[in-house]
Length: 422
RNA sequence: GGAGACGUCGCAUAGUCCGGUCGAGUGCGCCUCACUGCUAAUGAGGUAAGGGGUCAAACCCUUCGGAGGUUCAAAUCCUCUCGUCUCCGCCA
Image (tube, rainbow, N blue to C red; front, side, top):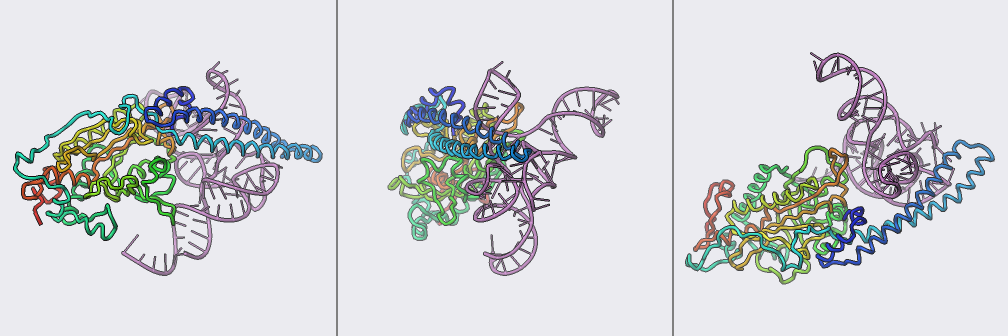
């Protein structure tokens, strides 16, 4: 939810943001009109209510005829108050519905445009030249089979398309990645968390996933619960309705399963485990003072990069264009790993600065020197397991189909240097 | 799944039976001031959030887990709901 006071002050800024996203500009004027209407209704209700309360206080003290006189006055007043209240509620609901349609105001530094208008910030690492090494690249599916690490056929048999089993070395690799990620996060000042993956509507709504992203969310009809698509949801909602005391930023790193319906991506990335309905992930989350959010965003990006570097995976960083931002994000950086079998970079991590958009919805603030202040929220992937496995298998594959284990992971895999053929 | 108790302004509690003087008392914590050489102790005052309003104030409104209802008037009465705790059942 954007800041209404700021919108009143500078509607043009919000209009420009909407335009940059390719979203409705007229909506801004509609919100302003609804806001004026609401405040009019509010004023009316409040003065009637004040009147009612004043007379009510007299009623309590009055006796006999005087009391009857006051009662007759306040009876008609009561009806007026109710009418005014209904009117106000209507205006409130109207305003809310419109405001929730407004996406976060984009950071002016974000590149303007659509999905393909991202800006490449940097490329890091060296892509291998498999031709020079003298063998044909295998993709992660093939490698997974050779190693006995990924079983996609049985995933489909048991759960359907876009499901998989990690088996043997694949299963151990996930656990190793999780441990490396959680240990790294803890060293970097994050509190390790294992959050619920099933949440109530309020948490889903508050984080902004029931808007344009709703079709990708699994809902449990019988219990009115949702399966989270990312630990961002339970982490953001962790402090819902709270005023944070003490030092900021507060950083959390959560290991959780992620469930995604992948509606609208039929036929896309159907091979392997690159795009699946369920995967596990270690996610970073930060509650941070508003004026430090940009620096914190850089830090999260830095942690993501360090992790990819530790895994010795070539990657690039892109600055996502305004039209491709989620509704909560003001700015977003993606790290894309090199995928040799596809000969292109593919997204493996993503970090967003949501400024005060999420915290406003979730009613999270902080107590600072000048009292209660708004707070910024930021999130970033530390390790999305399945995509990381794709990157490791493909980038570290050997001529015989075995896979070299990057040094940083070896301690978590019994010191082994390679995943050997099964 | 069954039975019961409870949910109040950071924490702990009073208030609910008998509706108005309760947006709400007390203790702790926290802040300011006074006093003591410092600390502690003591005394005085202050201390929920959100919104409207104002140059700034004053002032006004909303919120007593949540949603409805009764009433001129609800923390207080009624209904539903969520959560916590205790006991029983079941179970990993």
